Image: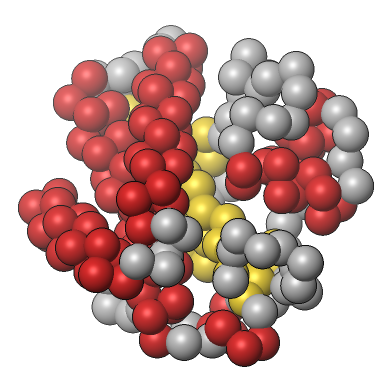
Length: 203
């Protein structure tokens, strides 16, 4: 069960159009959304099946519940992930808020083509999920070092958006470097690198 006080993408971050990244463009197409306000509402409230990152388990194809886009010639499968940063508790003496964070997968908009349920393809999707967790942990470490009190909500949101933007940039680079997972040797190299970073950041 996810905490209710999640720090989501704010209105000030939401762009005027839906082309700012492939993740949300995909959702827009799936739900026939044509304006950014509705897009924000879907992001914040519209998903049913949310998978929280777990160090002790890996992805399987059962988590990819959306109907595949068979006419998509670029993707063999698609995973929608993001980072969630949320308030864990507040020190009653200092007023400093302690935050936690995790990578999230939206299962009901993630999909795989029936003939592409391979081990190699799943490794690529796991890499994408690992990246979400990595940037979630980076945001958690950074924001807790800032020792934000109750009046620092805008600062908190700015930090979230900073790491979210970095996550999206890294995800795009991963897609390019691996040719959307088709270059499995590159997938394995990046997976090894990300695994090491995750272990260094894990509590």
